[in-house]
Amino acid sequence: MNTRTQIADFAGGCFWGTEEAFLGKAGVTKTEVGYEGGHVPKPTYAMVCSHITGHAETVRVTFDPKKISYRQLLELYMQSHDPTQLNRQGPDVGDSYRSAIFYHDAEQKQTAEDYIAELDAADKYRDPIVTQVVPVTKFWLAEDYHQQYFAKQRGDA
Image (cartoon, rainbow, N blue to C red; front, top):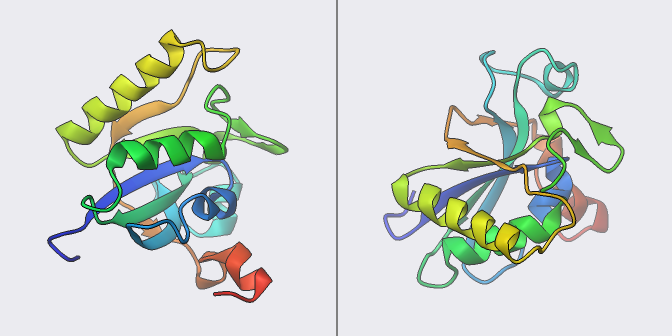
């Protein structure tokens, strides 16, 4: 990783859609989809979908904080899914689709908690935000066919 870039990890339902929120944004230098927050080493998509590993489908975003702030990434993330649904996004149900922010340091944790509190105080959503703000764990890269899935389907990846 370039010392000028930072990493942010977001889980918000199917990682294909969450990744789309960040692709092509100025300051985002890389996105990868994978599995995080579970207890089984080297999980596969089939294992995660069986809900036995505890992993969430997660997007790892590498970004240049001089071009896009962590706060701006949080805004994109919150717009990409329903943060009032813990283990469900649209038709996808289960802990692998949970809403979670995996923070990498105390500053990310504080920024995420402050932003969520701000959204709740402003009654931005009808229901309270249930997004978990938890420490980063081992990020397992998903299978290649999942990487930039929608971009590949459109032919622009």
